[in-house]
Image 1 (cartoon, rainbow, N blue to C red):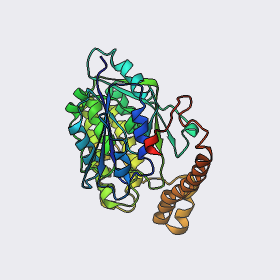
Image 2: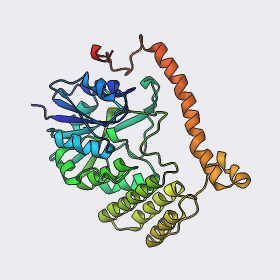
Image 3: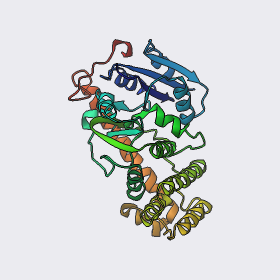
Image 4: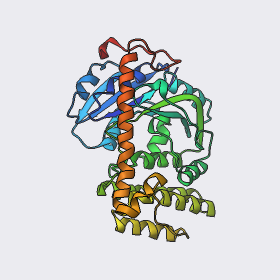
Length: 351
């Protein structure tokens, strides 16, 4: 008897993508699954589109807008699965993603094994996604995972994880205070609760890059900067609870240094907090550096314009690339297979 897997999808103003995302959940080869979509007070047609998929295996509910973390917490309260698959409303799972991971988890002696998978960015055409392994794409202990994540600034995308209910219960709810990096902080707690992390090399997640950006984008929002600082403090406390050593402190310092540019120069008060944290770790925080292609702007116009260029010009570039990719996607839609080598046929309900 297959154990039940709950696929939980928080959705907000995702009318462009939600049908494909739900389809990628429905066609999973792991048969014993339930799909729960929580619409977080969308103002577009997200809820209406999601309701087209409602069935005995697909539950669609709505709530007033409270944010992604609150929507995830609502979905979790409704689910019955022994394992949890988190899936954002614009991302996609390869057809065997859950089955590949469950084969690994079923060989584990307990429910304290956490399973990850590979992931790649895409815009419209999944066939263009390039899977580039990072230092996290392997079996790791919890402390080794966090050392690499923080010290090398690499991460696993939200949908890559398959989490047992035992781990989810121990980790607790998503933190609704975190307007950015809520997933990074949540999975830190899941990792702390686990005994081991196993990597499923054949499982894949497709992480969509959209013109509207991601919750993880901080930009010049003071509220997101404050939330990010809170998440960073928790990250440091979590890894130091596993191991107090020179290598952990070095990873924490590298983590602070890399993310310091999100606060400088707009919030000198928060940057001062980072400097204080670095001092407590036995190190020193340097002023952040701009990427070389934008550094020339600083002596001419100052830090602020240079940083804004570093933030906005890549988004403009991605917008142009996205427009081209969308045009090609439309041209190929009637004759291509979006998940090669897997075969996916769009359901008539989504047409």
